[in-house]
Length: 254
Image 1 (tube, rainbow, N blue to C red):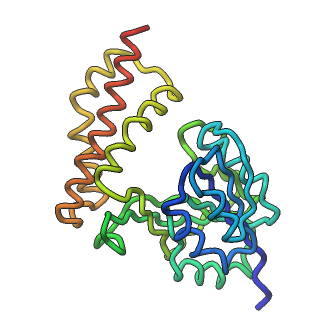
Image 2 (cartoon, rainbow, N blue to C red; image 1 turned 45 degrees about the vertical axis):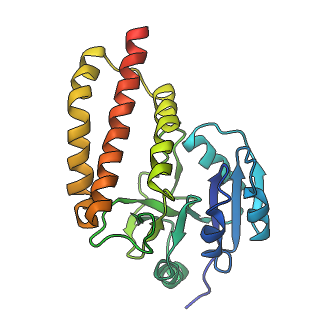
């Protein structure tokens, strides 16, 4: 078997000092290059990144897709792994990539991103949160330039392959932190998103929260997370409802 080609791991940051160390420690001895694009942190994010051997670049936030495209362009290797500052690559995913990469052709690889509740060390049973392309070859695709939806768009003939090893997502440190995260996030979503008709928004104002609760609790299997799964589903559904309420307020002010 030939040697594994080099891998660039890249991520975007803003005041991630309380969790970045754990994220980088999972890849610092495995990745051949770590690229951190920071949009103006005032905590110790940059110091932590540099201590882990990352190459740090400053770039004003231009939307999620554009920011990740900027980070892609800073990577010097052809194989790219994108992670968020609150995610931890699991050892079995690293081993799986090491095993398949020496003989791999340019392709897109889907990875399961599994949420971990505060106080827990691993995802709930039967977790099924997100399954998206995060590992890929430069010739196979790149992030779309969209302010909200950071998804890799593949070339027309680029194959997609499912990886088994997951990434653990520690998206919030406490329930209060999750609630505090919702207000600025929904404000940004409304500002960057497309306008909707008042009629549609008024209907969604009634239907959005129960529908989103069912989607998260049942179909994303937070029902197996006990009280934490129920609480997460309620808060996630409220966040979607709040976005609709803000969109309606914006529409009626026009």
